[in-house]
Structures are given as C-alpha cells and as structure tokens.
Length: 360
Image (cartoon, rainbow, N blue to C red; front, side, top):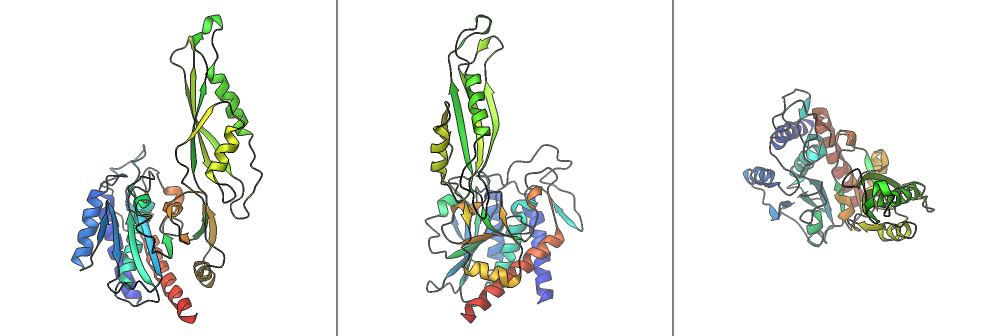
C-alpha cells in the first residue's frame, strides 16, 4: 500500500509541476482543463465538463448511495509583484514545487485527484465524486456558482485548500461594501461646497467603532475593516464624491443582509454590497465528517478565509496540503512532503469514513 501511495505522490508532483506552467487565471482555465482532461483520458477515465469545471464519477456510481464530493479549484490569482523567477517557469527542486498556484490550490488539486484515482474502481459505502472547479479566486459566475444546481445530489464534501491538513470546520463569510459619500463641489479657497471627503471620514470613523453584539461561539466577532478610499480631482476643488471600500468577514450569527441594514442605518454614505451570497459556513457537530475527524484525531480550527465551501448547501470540511499564508504571495511554493501528507491524509480519511459507514 505504501509503495502504491508513493507512486501517487510522484505522479502528483509531476502533475503539479506541469500545472504551474499553464496559465490559469480565473475565467481563463482552458489550458489546465485540456491537460487534465487528457490525463484522465489516458487512464480511460471519463470526464464531464460544465464550462471550465471538470466533474468525474466512479464507473459504478449508484444514485441509491450517498455521494461524497472531493473538490478543489484549478484557477489562480494573477502573480504578485516581487517574483524572483518566472511564475510559469519555476526552478526545479528536489524538495519543493515552485510556481503560481502551487500552494493555492494546486497541491490540493493533485492530491485529491490521485486520491480519487486510488479509489476509482473500489466499491465504497458512498459514491466518490471529483469536482475541479473554475473561477474560485474571483467568485465568478461560471465556477461553483454555476454548479450549485448541478450538484444537488451531493451529500457531503471536502473542499481542498491549503490548511496544513488541519480541518477547517467553520469558515467566515465575505461581504464587500462599496460606500459613496456625496457632497457639493466648490472652490477650496472660498470655503464653498460640501466636502464629501469629510462625510466619508465621519462614516469611516463610525464604522471603525462598530461592535456587533452577537458573538459566534465558534467564529467569534464579525470583523470589519475599511481598506480603500478615493476622492478629489485636483487640489483646489472641494470633492463632491468620495468612495471607500469595506471588507467584512461575517459569522454564522448574522446574514449579510442584516449587516448591510445595520450599517446603512448609522452612516450618511450610500452603501452597496458587491454580493450578498458569500455566506459563512460550518460543519454540524453531529455529522459523520466530524465523527471521522474525531476518530482520526485531526486538528480542527475555524478558517478566516473563504473558499467554494460558501457555495455548497451540503455539510463539508475544508482541508488540504500547503499553508494558507503562502497563498497569493510571490515565489509561491509547496513542499513535496506536503503532497505526500495530502495524499496519505485524504486516503486515510476516506478509509476511515468507509469504516464508520460499515459500522453503522
């Protein structure tokens, strides 16, 4: 068994090196889709495509069984400034895989893919479904948002993201708000007009002091940060408009709509949410996924970052090789030993999950 798993690690490493050489910005995943489709085809594995999303089922898929989805995303952000090498032509290393998307979430993609192939022909108490999704990094409409209705038969899932193979059992949501303060332009030398910048600063000060009364037992307080501000056309004109951006990480105690209503009531600026659908997520305490984590003594935590988990309507956990702090950074990398931990960890998890089903 160990020799077989080492083979998967070697193949996962080679695949990841290939993937990072293929540009795959959100909405532009075609090269990776073609490569992965050919990879499956060479192994006589059929794939289904919905846009740039790849769906793979076991050959004995049985609708009478529950379905367990293995999911990660194949798109990347654009490279950060400061790369010391070409992010699509990274240096080779015996211990690392370097390159854009190697950590987020290429390591999870290749580990989940080869775990799926390991179990591909095996009869389990549940169906295994592999979904490699697009447009995760920009929450695009053609990624998991497009797949929501297509995957309504999925009963539970693992979302592969760099977590150090710790299990995120809850995940904050994301609410991005565009604010605009409106005033009246005038000449700065004559003290004319109504300065929209001052209105915005007053509202920002109000937002800075906001405390949401409900505190989540698992996620803590709602986090709110003003991250951008823009106003003015030239030095001697009082600005009649000032825009700013607010980044909010909701918990399970509030809906995004409730937060919007609460903030609009205390600010003069007009607030508009970019999306109200990026909800927080949590794994039910009595679910079989939690039982499996407990039996394996897997470390659990609450994730401050979002993922495609927020699009799922079924119970899930977020777990994968690599570390979140490396994501979106220059000179991105993952250790090859982390790929081994990913393949081994996923296989162990599925074996344990199958054992629990057989016992029940």
